[in-house]
Length: 94
Image (cartoon, rainbow, N blue to C red; front, side, top):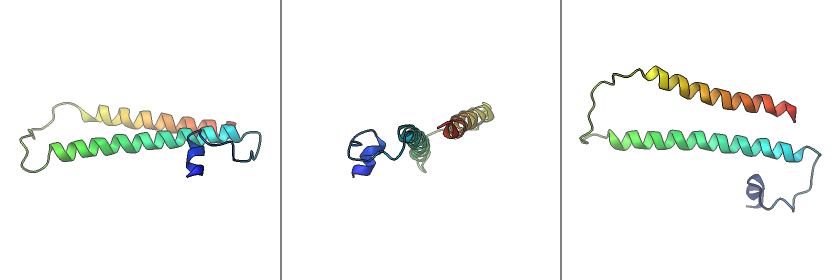
């Protein structure tokens, strides 16, 4: 349990410092963990919402969507790409 607390900033006083940049590396790992968790939660909640709303026997309308979904898909992909490219760019700077 103690190593997991160290990822979130608590209970790190018992860990020996391995280098001068250990704090920066821990920060990058924390940010990647938070970003990855956020992506999984957003996708999981969206999937659960769609599964519950459009299950067989529900009264949800299933008419064809008239809006362009490619805009939403492009925005989602671009935002995710930019966030993880930032991590890729920031990583070697440590």
